[in-house]
Image 1 (cartoon, rainbow, N blue to C red):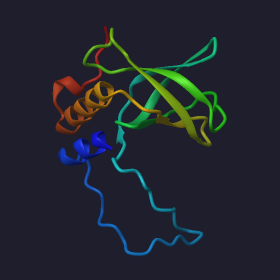
Image 2 (cartoon, rainbow, N blue to C red):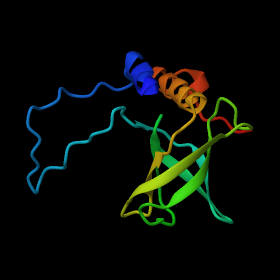
Image 3 (cartoon, rainbow, N blue to C red):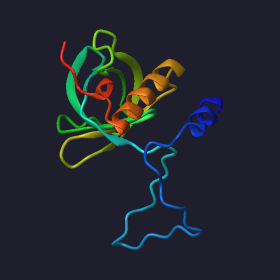
Length: 144
């Protein structure tokens, strides 16, 4: 909880619209998004490790607590994995995260939620996303 309090005290990357008093969804409306922090569109390399299998993908969005990947093998919801996320600030030191598939997308992409991410990982992702929002060079995608 202390980490959420710390992150909520930082400036928001993308402001959310004001909350509505009643949440109802008709067949033409999407249910309300309940994420505490908005995911930011960004393309990064990541490596999924499930047992002895390795899968390489590109992200389509990222937040300090999860990400979405683009096309590929859609693992079943609930699948746990070790995830290496390559941020451009230091590609030789990927973030090592544990993640769980929370949704499979029609194009083969998946939504992942990080499971108990380390505070240093959350801070590093947040710094990267803040740099992306500002358009600074430290947020650009660099090759080794």
